[in-house]
Amino acid sequence: MRCPFCQSEDTQVKDSRPAEDGAAIRRRRVCPDCGGRFTTFERVQLRDLVVLKKSGRKVPFDRDKLARSLETAVRKRNVDPERIDRAVTGIQRQLESSGETEIASGDIGHLVMEALKAIDDVAYVRFASVYRNFREAKDFHDLLGELQGDEDEE
Image 1 (spheres, rainbow, N blue to C red):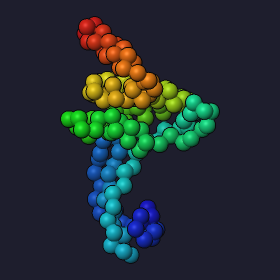
Image 2: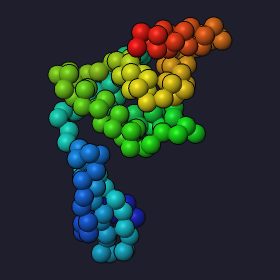
Image 3: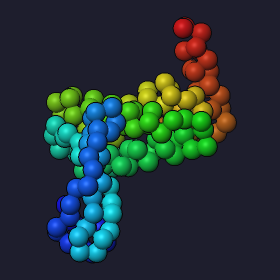
């Protein structure tokens, strides 16, 4: 693993432990050249995923971008960061196990909506307002009506 500080290719693992409920390994590393310390994560990747954007452009799937989207939605909400990590891991696993290598961005957005609905209603509404491109207050009202309808069914 290359050192992010001095770019040395000779770093040493000082500590390893399971992370994300065993879905990843967290490694603490040190660079013998500059003394820099940093953390890496090792995860299973079943296949390389490509995201098909609405514009037709194809970009590599970025787990960190997915995590940032969920973190933005739950910002200033009392949500355990571990729940977000589990949601990201779950979404990524669903995508990898779908058998498809090209995933439409809308499909990813739908999975994020499902995950946020289970985590926090406010985060769900925040994400939905961007994902569904809300233009007016009525859009929020309609979404809240959907949420209310789901609660009535339970």
